[in-house]
Image: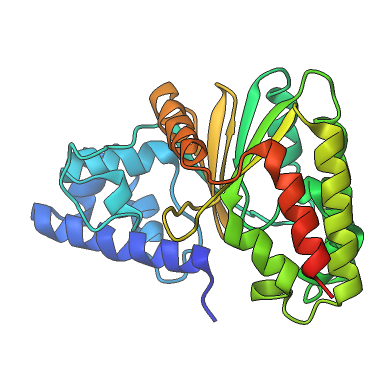
Amino acid sequence: MSTPRHDLIQVFRDRLLEVIERTGKSRAAFASAIALDRSTLSQLLSPENERLPRTETVVAIAREAGVTVDWLLGLTQSKEAGTQLVDSQVEIEGGAGDPVDERLSRWHREAIGAKIRYVPATIPDLLKTEATIDYEYRQHDRRMRVVQRERAEARLEYSRRPETDMEVCCSAQMLESFARGEFIWRGMPVADRRAQMEQMAQLLDELYPTFRWFLYDGLQRFSIPFTVYGPKRAVIYAGGIYLVLNATEHIRMMARQFDDLVRAATVQPPDVIALVQSLLRRTK
């Protein structure tokens, strides 16, 4: 079965073949034009290859072929150069979700003292109980569950630092789905969901105002999971890979995207506790 990373590599391989053919150059001539060894180009085009090239190589291919990096990587259907050409300040990193991955902890440490803006894939990790983590990762081995618990605890301790400034934004429907035992939480015991909401309410009260959770209407807005680590970087979570943005303009763009979600929020941080408590009373 293919993985998101495998699909990404396949799209890149197909589009690389397409641009080489369109230039009318031989593979050797194309490799020379982008300062790449012919053997390296052959490896990139091999069906057995399971690695994306270095960022500089992707950028060089895009420039030589007159297409965008986004199109080469399958992130857009528009291949026209000049429509948001991503430069070498973008890194594509695999291994997202690996139990030994320390990047998230390092990125948080490096952002101490700066505002972190966070759009989670589900409910914020640092608010989760062990029971919730174990349920969400029940298809994984014990090692993964232990690591996820440790990460949640580390995020919570990070948020308790007096210098922390963290904003979280996601849809109100995500929280409501959890309370009702829907979506990925279908089948999660009611007692565990109630304990989770009780912990949520307690931590939201404890951590405010250094931790602020905004909820928007998922019928009106949509966002993929991403985090802006102050002025240092923005990271987009795309399944098994991270898109790490290091250019100042890209980081600012993601910060503006987050701020737009906050402006559209229908539930402000002081009111999230009341919503959680209301959902708790209805969860039986």
